[in-house]
Amino acid sequence: MTGRLHGVVAMDGPSGTGKSTVSRRLAAACGAAYLDTGAMYRALTLAVLRTGLDGAAPDAGSVAVAAADDLESVTDPSAPAILLAGEDVEAEIRGPEVTAAVSAVSAVPEVRTALVQRQRDLIAKAVASHGGIVVEGRDIGSVVVPDAPLKVYLTASEEIRAARRASQDRKAGRGGDTAAVLAAVRRRDRLDSTRKTSPSHAAADALVLDTDELSVDDVLAELLRLVRDRGLVT
Ligand code: DC
Image (cartoon, rainbow, N blue to C red):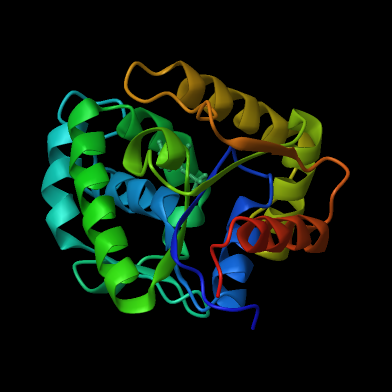
């Protein structure tokens, strides 16, 4: 282990940048907790779809907010999990139905307010018990923890991100046609970065890391260097 992380590392950026993999590995390497906030938006989206509503339905927001009380996030980086009313929904929230509907549900201001509050509570608890936490999402450095001592925004070209996502989907047995994935990536980027409430963008003081030419190991090495240089591990 590298030493123990103190405080919060905010990891933001769109999908397909390797954010989840490197965030988990960074947390594991520094004895820290790990929180995937995208999984929380996905689980509430699943709750909406299970009622038979689509993500953009007028009542979707209130169904999602009500379901937030049933949400449980396990922040152990070696076995992260998301539970909805006690049910492990990790596999189902990665499916195409949830992926297609999550941008609409996560754009509802009341849904964001409910989840940001829960995220801040989880982060405070993890810092109290572990000392540090790596949190990944779209608005962590800009909204959820604006005073995080390290904010990183991972980027990569649309094509590279779509190819990575398609390969992940194929490995998980979920199709994985690169052209279709590229169209879905473009659509979700557009919706997430143009919504009115906390659109996805790099915080002004975030370090932007382009991962087009970087492997997961390269990104992890850079993050470990950053937490050491900033005195965040002892
Ligand atoms: O990281 P992901 O692809 O699992 O995230 C799913 C969706 O949730 C993403 O399209 C945008 C939304 N999201 C968000 O609005 N804010 C976050 N902090 C995390 C995710």
